[in-house]
Length: 323
Ligand SMILES: N[C@@H](CCC(=O)N[C@@H](CS)C(=O)NCC(=O)O)C(=O)O
Image 1 (cartoon, protein in one colour):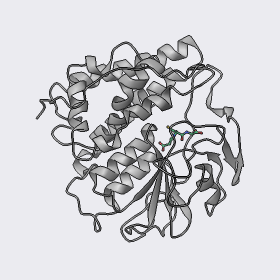
Image 2: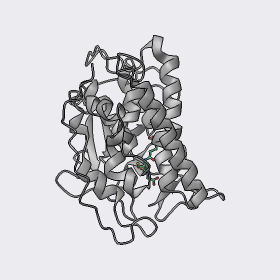
Image 3: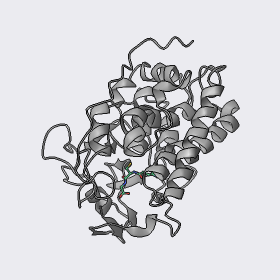
Image 4: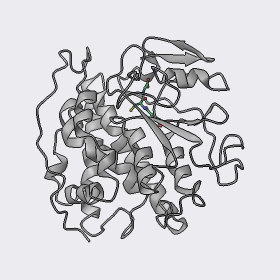
């Protein structure tokens, strides 16, 4: 899939992600600048990334759940005409995430053929994995940030003067609550499904998969009394849970062996997920067909024949009945 050392691209698999115990570990993102209203420095990185319409470009893939967070924020904060996007093809190859020359999976901005070319154009020589999402500054020709959690948080605030929104995803009185949910959701669910799906021993798989369902069961119970995770308002915590739920029955249930229960078996989580899906702009960020193409792509370890299942057939548009 490729990785980069000091700005030089190396094709092939970076093997640093599997521990000797067979557990799979996610590597940390490494470019952490922030777009801010006046261009002052954010919590990490340097200054100079002022919020401006049309200045920034987001590289994503429909099937990547981390990229999905950023697409959701862009949609819910009314930033679709402020922040442009290029979507890579759902199947990675030895070049990693790639683009077609034209059409849905092309890059109208830089006209590149692979995401690693964004990284090699960065003003600072990059070292690390070549992941999406990655946020690019057209003006300075450099990467702003490639950590989805940061991108979500900066998009919530950075463009308030340009695209006013009354939907604060991270309101101050809820910081503690949101942070606690985020911690659980990231560890046990967002990343938990990957620890189950990418485990290379029975023990590591069972540990990951059990943790996924323990957390989902706990959240299902909580949602019996609460419309959203932090009560009546939709927050960043819900936004970070949703990408995993959207992929659950079409991908993780089967491809990652997270099959103790389906999302659609849950009494509260399933209507909750539909409640979010039916919010303005959210359905446009969801591509079930592409999730299947991505998660069931040909892989020696996980799906050697590359056969994509025909189902499941699930209706996300049925009324959710939550208020
Ligand atoms: N910490 C990153 C992780 C992003 C990530 O792992 N993206 C995956 C796709 S779902 C990727 O691009 N992987 C390519 C690779 O690791 O080579 C974030 O949340 O933004």
